[in-house]
Length: 142
Image 1 (cartoon, rainbow, N blue to C red):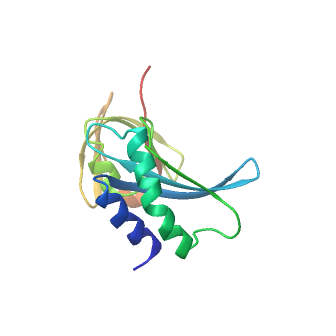
Image 2: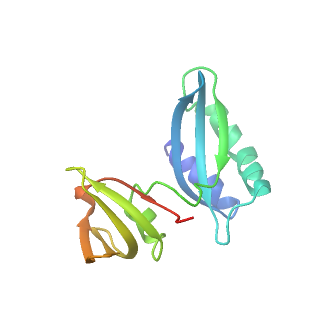
Image 3: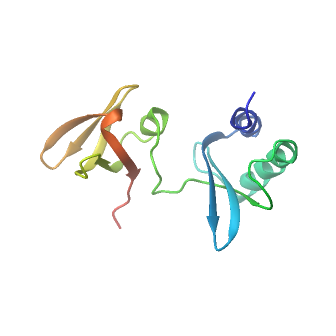
């Protein structure tokens, strides 16, 4: 079992779902960020509970070289979409994606399966396969 699988089991044990794991550097600090979701939203108390559950796992299988900070949070209202499950869980939301030719498509995500997504745009419906997508995220119109 790899580190991500161990973290996913711990997160599920707390009644939540693992959304993504990101390792990054901000202001000269290494950060190991774990994004989690839950129907109805994720609370600060739930994030703290999950952090306490996965901390011992990270003591055994260090995720990064040297000192780092563990952060557990919601992916937020505007979140990156990286895999088919992310798209499937975002049906009905507004998304923005870029293809490898730097074209941008914006609209409502109306369908997603293991191969492609369907987006309702102002020009009609567009179908895009995952291998055509260079980046994608949900967005919120304020």
